Length: 162
Image (cartoon, rainbow, N blue to C red; front, side):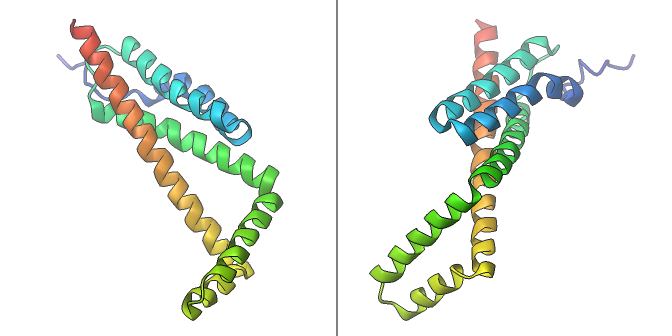
C-alpha cells in the first residue's frame, strides 16, 4: 500500500508556505524598519512557523528539514528587508558608506589600499560593494534561519518524546 504524502517524511511546501509566508513578510518589514524588534520577530516567526508545521505534520521531522524550512523564512525575509531598505534608505546608505570610505582613505597610508578605496567610491565600485554586501547578508540570513529551524525541530522532537 503506498504511503500518503504526510507519512513519507517529505516537507509539504504548499502547507508550509501558507504558514510561513505572511510571518516572513512581516519579519522582513520589521527588520527593515524596526531593526532590534524586527530581529526578535524574525526569530519568533521561524520558531512559530516550523513549530506549527511540526505539530500539524504527521510523522517526525528531521533537523535538516527544519533547517530547510527556516531557510525559506530567511530567504523571504531577506528579500523583503533588502527591497525595503534599498528603496527607502538608498541615498542615506550610500552617503554613510562614502563617509566611511573617506575616513578609511585618510587613515591608511598603503597606496594599494587607497587605490582600492578610490575604486569603491566610483559607481562601478559601489555597485560591486553593494552586491558583495547583499551576498554576505543573504548568507547570514540563510545560516541563522537554518540554524533556528533545525534547533526548533530538535527541541520540538525532544519535548514530544517526554
